Length: 321
Image 1 (cartoon, one colour):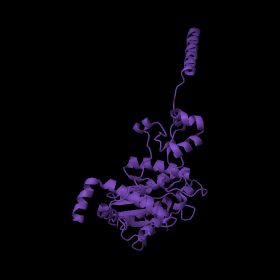
Image 2: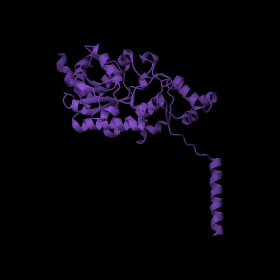
Image 3: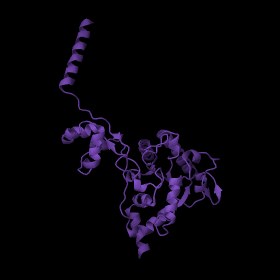
């Protein structure tokens, strides 16, 4: 027995010596930064020795370098091999390309059969589109109301339900009366004041599930939660938690086969806060500039991607002859 113990101790000592002489190089998992970007400080320092000489191993300094210089220089913020790992869900990007005039007919048809659901931020988007009579999105329908939330939406007897045809009722009931094929949902800013990102994802999921149960043919698309102005945190309503919510929600959408429109990152500054020129009240609400430069383009490009090039050509051709 003593001999077995001695052998085990010798083996352990040899293993420890090997680890000292030949240490394992293991990078930390990428961290979701407040602006929605994944970043692995250990990987960035190890693979950019010139940067490490200047910034050391400080995550803050390394990330500041990546944002200011590394991104445009083509440096990887984390191990690119992770992109091949099915368990790593990177936040999807957003396409803000200009919209071709030839796509107008297709887009008007798409959005005239879409309904947008949400709170005061979504109501602000409704007001924005009301001034753009010829915009490709002007035919969209809305079920949005100030102070509405996923908590309110899930309560069938809540007094805050948006009205449709003069009647206040749960959104899934209103949708059953609408000629729509898809529902764009953006909740959360009111919910995060009192509930965690995980709890908010579950509440938004419940709303989407109820819409789908009552209206099986309606597609579900989730719009990411938008950032807030710096220094206006309330409860969980802060940009790091918003980034966490958006990440969790994007994973949920992938699991359920829902669309996810990630407009958050396009609205943030280098610190992950709402851009000053996109804020109408130095809190959560948005300017027409934010809606025009981000929302309009992101939603139209999302629609074109969903429709596909072949369908666009088929619909576009006769309309322009």
